[in-house]
Amino acid sequence: MNFHETIAVAAEPYPFEFVPATCALLLIDMQRDFLEPGGFGEMLGNDVSRLRRTIEPNRRLLAAWRAQGLQVLHTREGHRPDLGCLPRSKKIRGRSPTTIGDPGPMGRILVRGELGHDLIPELYPLPTEAVIDKPGKGAFYATDLHAIMQNRGIRQLIVTGVTTEVCVNTTVREANDRGYDCLVPEDCVGSYFPDLHVAGLNMIKAQGGIFGWVSHSEHLLAVLQ
Ligand code: TIU
Image (cartoon, rainbow, N blue to C red):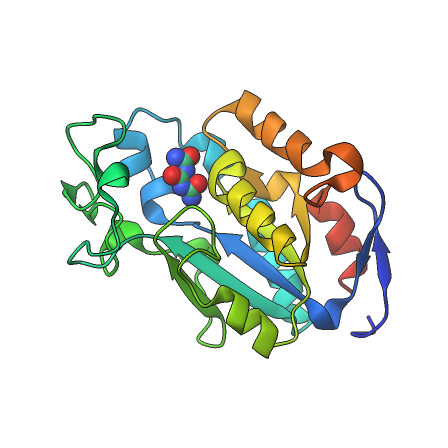
């Protein structure tokens, strides 16, 4: 693979012009509390198997991506231990008896430094890969992701992770408004809600790719060699 050539990757609504040198793989919130049995997600009554099906495709894509020496970024949703970056609206929304910052099954829920907040071992970052701690759903809000991308010459993102219609969608929209091109491999993103997963992908690729492109990891693996 030539790092600087433009490679057409099969995608909807039309092929994605992949330039490896300027493209990063961005894994969104593959955290224990969202994915693992016994975590916060499951505690809220969600079926974590709907997210766990994304682990293996992400593992394969990440391995192929790393093997080519391409750039990788990870995000984690969570808050400072003092909860200074947790809006009251986010704390009380949902009226759950247990909310962000409270003791949960894997430490304080969505608090930085706690076990449940950490990334799952299957997709653990290498020391060279930036981990962006984000207080919101979008990876650009109140983070240095934009600066990191500018400093590293990143203009395209392959966005994977969870959940399709929440943090993945918000991040793709934020990236789009900043002038970045995003491709979402559908097997590498997941939602607790199948209908919202489909809707989330449709919203990205509708209207000629209004927010970006949707593809499958097999089309990326086919060119990562
Ligand atoms: N990462 C992410 O999507 N956080 C969420 O809160 N997702 C939900 O689906 N609630």
